[in-house]
Length: 217
Image (cartoon, rainbow, N blue to C red):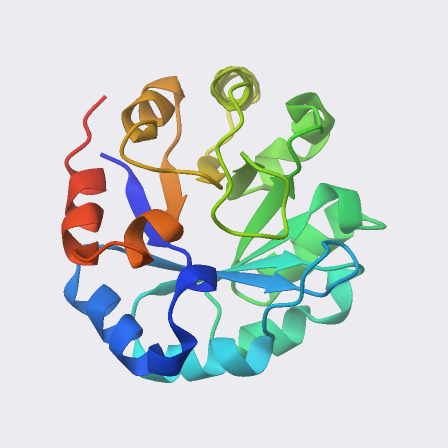
């Protein structure tokens, strides 16, 4: 079964405590925090201060996804805020190798994300250093988008790269995950499912999380 990571980009920010408590009660193991700067992506979300707030409210694993330019400038901030994993974009880093090493030195899991148009093979030389590969299944910047169909093939290709290099990297899928595609994503090789609108727009969010945990490959 996959790891389920509810995306806090989709929460009701008028009820941060209630939304976090719902996830705390659920089987979800991770919290996914999308940090957007309005430069790398065309939207602005929140920063390390919100991650710190969520850290105070939850003991779950916090996965900070930095959709920002030059993320290496802020790694310490997110570690201090309580992130357990920090994911940076290949497309946004001047030196991905150095950035991944710095994340690990801080004691966090190191993640690398790639946009829909980016080939998985560009990660080959780093794959043994990466703990989590975040495959964007939509163009980053906004929630509620439909998953791109080529994502399944991309996951399968990435799985081959991981096996070929004897890497232990997990494959995370971010964007458009829902009841209709979740099983197909896990069958393709996804280990972590990030779901925002599917969970938080539901009248029964804990049941949606439970559904994702019921998936078997």
